[in-house]
Length: 281
Image (cartoon, rainbow, N blue to C red; front, side):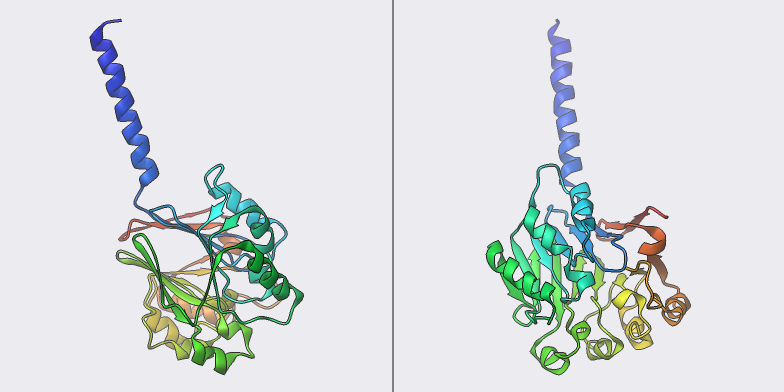
């Protein structure tokens, strides 16, 4: 074999390696709104490959299957999980996740529910060995180029709304360069009006409480001013999403995506532009 051919093969090998390296290092933030039925679960991967899960859906192994399909093979570590509140359709999937993955950090309100699932959650995170943070004690989480502002609940909100689990949902805003996402849990319009003076402008809004008629008031939508609204909803008997909410979002020219129609919804951004991938049912 001539030296020229050897040189060419070595050069090709270097080029191929560089190409693979660029692909794996990427510069996109990826947010996947999992289709978990009537419940919330959001998977986030930052450009630096931090993995975050907000809520876990109603269980039945759905979250575990979804996460294993998007996580790199052999990666069994989650950097951060956020539990917005302890309702069954937000907490249940975390039990299997905690059994099968190492979770390094946990953020929640610290406000226990009255159900056995809430008790199980507290028992499991106590032995998980993760760093545990509470929403009234932390304002910001920095994950490489991605910043998450913790907007609610603070001590005032917890004291005022302690009897309403939905309104003490953890509300967070994620910012990457010029792009932003607002995650709202199940807050009602009462809490929406409490936080309208916060920095809640966002390009992508996770519509609160599966599109309930008691959330997504006009004042709140005006302040958030989203381009895209995602409704995490499945088959239900509650009337979610409400016609009033859908009409309001439509009147503002907001693109609406729904898990019950669009399946898993993946939104990726380079910090300026957005790309949406769905698997319509």
